[in-house]
Amino acid sequence: MSNVTQLSPGAWQISHPFLGEHEVIGSYLLEGRNELAVIDPGPGSMVESLFASIREAGYDPEDLTHILATHVHLDHAGATGTLVRQLPGAHVYVHSQGAPHLLDTTKVIASASRIFGDRMELLWGEIASTPQERLHVIEGGDILNVAGRRLEVHYTPGHAVHHVIFFDAHSGELFAGDTAGVRLPGVDYVRPPTPPPDLDLEAWSDSIDLIKSLRPDVLYIGHFGAVKNIPEHFERLREKLYSWGEFVLGAMRDGKEEAEIITMLIEHTRPELLQAARDPHALERYEIATNYPMTVQGYMRYWSKKHPERL
Ligand SMILES: [Zn+2]
Image (tube, rainbow, N blue to C red; front, side, top):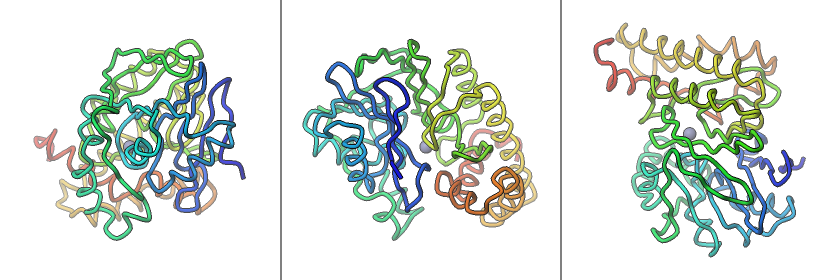
């Protein structure tokens, strides 16, 4: 199975065989005017597969000029520091609020270690820091002229406080990161990825409205691939974001503990995913893209910090 799919002139989708699963975690490759850019390079554990995919697309990873991060979560940008060390021509572009976490990965490693424990190396590989001189801070409203394209940067907090999307208004292609949720190929189901610590439902809903107002023709999402039924997709995401949130809030108000709420949310939502997928393996695939423990932790922190009045 090829891990590389051409999407349009100068644009490829890359699938990382993460934990042996294809089309769960993705990167996007852009080429033009002697520039080679990757949007969301993926986890540090997938650097070799990223390089193989770039070669398969017909390019030399050594020629990588730009690394664009929609946000700094490890499944999207964990490989950044390793790539920068290996590729002298590569420069990194990340939102100002995400930049400190690439500049110094100590905190990211510490918080991820608390969650993933002895699976850290297997899942994420090396999580190296990026030197300041290779790091370029971006903000919503910026324009990046990259690989022959004019990419608009739009600030889309909600999933992460430093999340941005990249929009090519000329082609109508929008690189959405996790702002457009998780929808795996072959499964007609949109799942909300709601990890701690930044989850903000109001901000996310505003980010959805912002993306819709851009009227993109296609969304390229991190997990995974192209989405074309955009208004419907976003309304399903928004509905799930809030309905799962209300479910977790209800359990919190009933005095349930985190572990109990995780079990309750799985029982509450598994039937709808199974119905959409008609394949129990889809549950595992969705769980790799966004897992229930982090989903519940994100909502619990959101309600406690942002809406204590509702508890
Ligand atoms: Zn994320």
